[in-house]
Amino acid sequence: MNQIKNICIYGVGGVGGYFGAKIIDGDKNKDLNVAFIARGKQLETIKKNGLILKTEDRIIKVKSNLATENVHDIEKIDLMLICVKSYDLDGVINCIKDKIKDDTILIPLLNGVDIYERIRKNLERGFVLPACVYVGTHIEDYGIVLQKGGDGRIIFGKDPRRINYYPEEVMEFFEKLKINFSYQENPYKEIWTKYMFIAAYGLVTAKTGKTLGEVLGNNDLLSDVESIIREIKLIADKKRVSLDRDVIKNSIEKARSFPYETKTSFQRDVENPKKKNERDLFGGTIIRLGKEYCIDTKYTEKYYI
Image 1: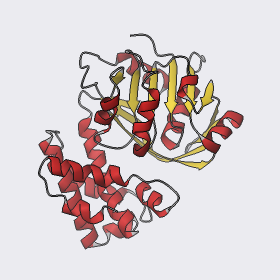
Image 2: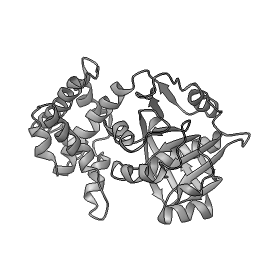
Image 3: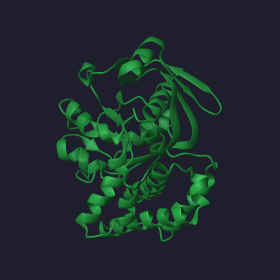
Image 4: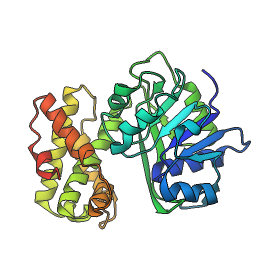
């Protein structure tokens, strides 16, 4: 494998903006070529003023080598971080598939338990490393990303189709740039564990309009959260995903670490009628997999809006 020099951040929202800024800021010798794929006013602002990342302890301002809406403007891609919402994923893969070479590395940093399968349905080439990410970010204004939580950690593993490939150069790349990461031989434990939490609480908060604290204080709603988590756990068991023994309890209790007034990202999207939301990611996926494995998903269906 070649050394990673040419990086593409596809989607410069909260997640893409965070890691894009961290990569450019960490490249002290300016050896890398970093391209941003964005659109609309976000793209216009980044092209004109650069990208600003605000963290708890510092403000980072960076300029990418290229900011564009068209991936074909990029000459070469060694590593691509896919940082779009799930409803844009299929369109993105169709756009990039002619640019992906056999040795291109793709890391999808979006929520969902079937992301790898969706990518591989339309993309044969390249290495696709299943992943999930823990970072609390959002766009404060065009060209400005605010981090308010999470440890900015990427968890990734091997490409299930190309298991002889060990992504050593990705780990060296992240270490050099001080990107927080964890390599795991099988990352699906983390992917499913995260999904349980965000799907169950996302569905219930979006349907009821309640904050996390209000859900935790309502026994009926909390019982429904647990029931959705159990439905997801049954599907994971059928798919032979090895999860921790206390995963259901831990998923429920995790919400207590957030402020009472916290709203889930899915809930915030649903509250904005002009904004697309990931209802299919959080509800549709569970219902489809439930039918595939003959598992009753009546609680997910109850909150599928």
